[in-house]
Length: 120
Image 1: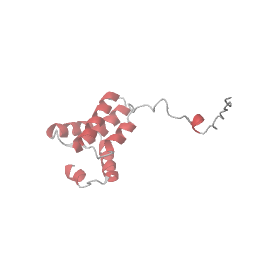
Image 2: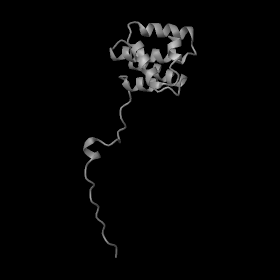
Image 3: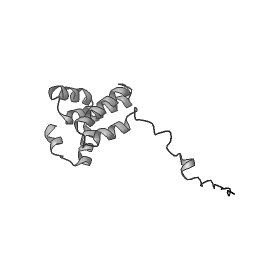
Image 4: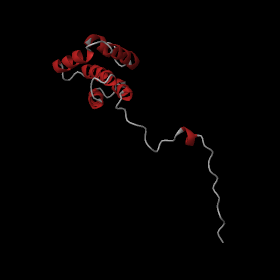
């Protein structure tokens, strides 16, 4: 596993795909947790654990807080890897869009004309 992930280098698409497939395997969260305990500085182990934890949260087998924390840890360990961020976005704990974000009804609404009154 270590060799497989190390061999992807910065090919983020391939790396993300491999991690996603591995995280879908039964028992991947336990296996990734053991790997992280054995190698606490392994960003690869942290990222696999993050993806596996998100999958578990989506199934209601762990909390959304656990998923968010695992993704944040992986992102800190591998800041150039977009995989933990994408996992965080698919997590049930993903942040809501900002309240000031335009809604579909206001984004394309015609501008309200403004009138000016001449000053005398």
